[in-house]
Image (cartoon, rainbow, N blue to C red; front, side, top):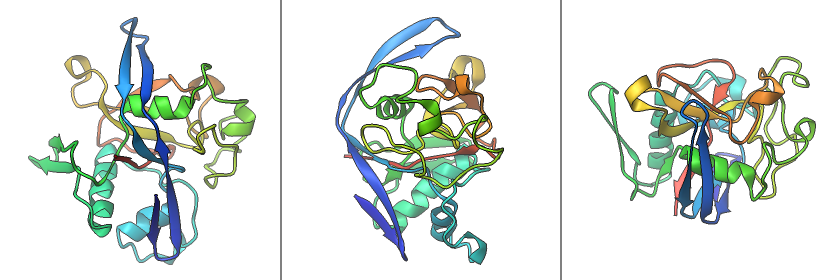
Length: 225
């Protein structure tokens, strides 16, 4: 599938189903999750796509293929709903109580954030290691980024044609981290241009409040099949 808006083309990759093992180092726990087939974008959402969808008239974002950053989880949810409506699809998210409660419609055909299980499964792309390739070849991170994000798609993709799954920007996932301990905190994955090598791995998990935003945190679109 390709999202086409104005002159932009934003491809999504068909991800076949399978099984992925997640691990929580804090709780010393591992568990398996079955993954249904889904679509995942080849790249993180770019500045150009983000601001075009939200009707930002600023010309400074035209052709800007760096990842959109300073995006909170709530911002990402809103974007998913807006682009779904623009593409004539059903929204996945209903927002209630001034954004304090988010209801997910798993039957909707619109765009959404990947679950962390989907994200990790897609990132590993059938590989078994902490990364899906040599880090300098696949990721922008602290040692090679010169302290800034880079245009998407300039490093080598994984075996399923997904770029920047590690490094460049952290990516929000849909899931709560540990509701009993952290409340509404959501998970993000993948490492970033500012992260050390050890933080840029397929199983590395971070979390923050859904209103949190920072200059190395973005997101990637998914869609159920």
